[in-house]
Image 1: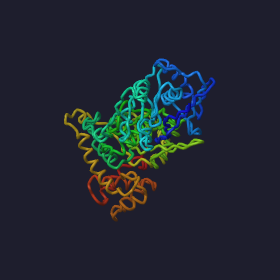
Image 2: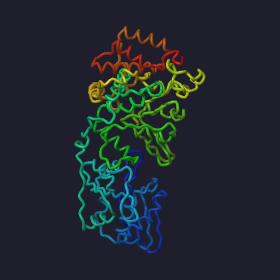
Image 3: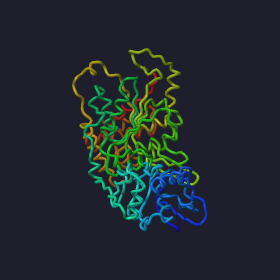
Image 4: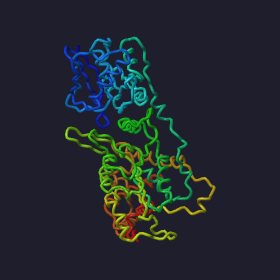
Length: 511
C-alpha cells in the first residue's frame, strides 16, 4: 500500500513542504531515499522502539520511503513522527483517511514521547499558505507555531495522541494565541535600567542619539568606566518592536531552535558573543547553514566587548552585512539569505593596558604597542560605525550621589517620538525605517545644510581628514539630533554635536 504524509524542511528562514511517500511491498528491507542525512537514516531505530513500546510493530516487509523533492537535502531528526505515521498507515495498522491534510513533525523518543524541533514558526506559516488543515508538533514548540492564525495547531506529548486523533478515537483541541495581546505585553520595568547609571550624562546622550537613529556606536575607555554597563542598557531605550519586526525576529530564533516555550518575541534581542567566536558562528553558515549571531541580533543589539580582541578576519566579514543589512550564504546547490539589521555596539580599551591618557595611572604601553593594538580594527569597519565616544571613569562624588538618574522609560519616550518622525519620513520607502539606513540620495534630500553648517563641516573634514563615508555618517547623526529636537531642518548646532562623536577620526588621537 502507498501512502503520502507531509512534513517540512527549513532553508534560511523559509519552509518547503516535503512529501513523504511510504510504500510497503513483499520482501524484506528498509529503504529511505530522497537525500536524507544521518539523523534521518538513524530514525528507523527510534521509530521501531517507539512503535513497539506503544503496542504497534515495524512491518516485517519491504518498506520504501521517498522524501520528495528528492534532490533537496533533508536534515535533522524532526521527520521521525512523519515517517512513523506513514509506516503505520501504509501497513494498515491504523486507518487515517485525512492524514494528507496535516503537516506532521516531531522527534521521537524510544517511549514514543516527542522532543522539540527547529523552525516551527516558518513551517506553520508555510502550512497555512498551502492550505493544510492542521499541524501536529511537539508541545514544547506549540506557542511559536500557534502565532499563525487560521491554522489548527496541535501540541503533542506522545505518538499515541496523533494516532487516536487520526483514527477518530480521541480529541485534540487546537491551540490559538491572540497574537496582538501576546505582543503588547511589553515590559515597562526593564531588567537593566539607565537609572542605575551614575554620572556619564554625555554618554547617555550618545546612547539616546544612537537608539533614536539606529546608529552603530563604539565606546572607548579604561576598564571599569562603565562601557559594558551602558551597552547592556541600550535595548531598554529602543522603541518597542512593531508586529512585523517581532515576527521576523521570532522566525530567526525559531529556525535556530532558541525559543524555549515562548510565543511571539516582544523584547528586542541583545547578543554578546565572546571574542573567540569564529566567522561562521558570527555571520552564519555551516554545511547546513544556520543563522549566526548577527542574524540572531536582527532588530536588536549586537554587542562586541573588547573589539580589538576579536580576530581581524572575523570583524572583516561583518563589513558587508553592516551595509546591506542581510547576509547571504552560498553553497554549491543552494543559497540562503538571513536578515541582519542590527545595531552594532562595540567597546574597547584605548590601549593594551587600558589606561591610555589616564593621568592617575602609569601608561605601560609603548606607541608601537598602541599602534599594533588599534590596527586590529580596520579603517573601513570603523567608518561603518557612526558614533565614536570616549568613556571616562566616574568620579567618587557622582558614584556616591543618592539622586536617582533619568529612567530608561523616560528616555525611550523621546527616542520613540524621534523614530515616529523617521517612520513618517520614510513611509513610502520599502527598506528604510530610520536614519541609519539612509543612502547617499536620501542624505542629500533630508540633510540639506545652510552655508554656516557647510562651512563648519568643511573645516572639520579638512582638519580631521575624514573619508566620504565619515561625512555621510556625520550628516546622518546630525539628522537624528534634529529629530530629537523635533526640528525640520539640520542646523549648525546639530552638525557641531555630530562632529564631536567622531573621536577616532581626530588627528593625534594616538598621542
